[in-house]
Length: 108
Image (cartoon, rainbow, N blue to C red; front, side):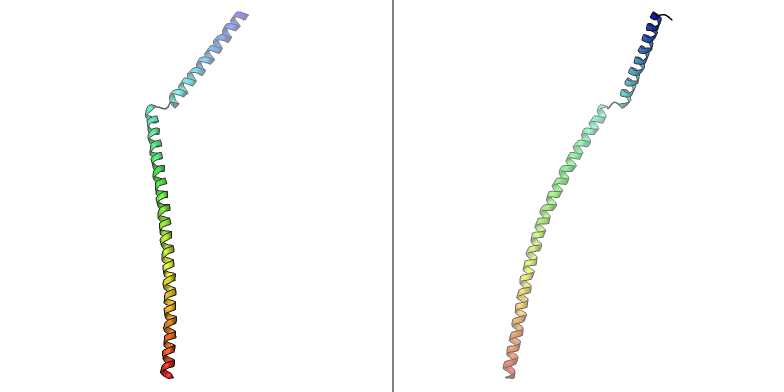
């Protein structure tokens, strides 16, 4: 084999390797390509996710407001209960004092 044949054989081998590489790359891209329908579906899913996140944020805000209202109502109710219990305690104490006064006056 002389020098010209060696160069020609090397060139053919390199061309065949290049062609096989290009064909393999084309084949991989062909099977992994994203279609317009898939992109549309991804856009719809992204929009739905965005709407769901907004709904979740609104629900969280509503629940926080509602919790604050209920906590405030509970604090007011507890304050009213304490006031009522204090009034009842004072009324019982006063009633007991009146009973004792009446008993002293009836006995004495």
